[in-house]
Length: 119
Image (cartoon, rainbow, N blue to C red; front, top):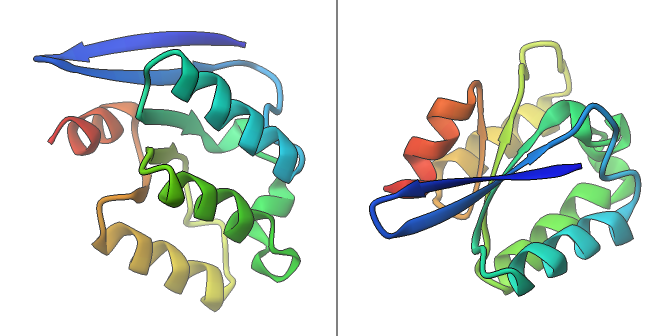
């Protein structure tokens, strides 16, 4: 795993870059949050491919637990991916509602993620 830093004006954004799954369970998400927050990041971009598919099954609570911690610590998160493959109405509603706010956003590209987090 590498952390790519994007500096936009005076805003520092961490992008997690990896070919592997970084978040397999709730604790992995909390570790990532803590490590990046400790390094001075309060805006993070992670790619859908780096998150276990279980995250996107809302019934198991992984997404809720992880995203609640990001919200509690006021760390903004953008998750980059193609969400058209998900047919779950509850997940699509969750993504829609998240994207209405500023804390957690589900976006299609890294460029979109950087724009949202730097705004």
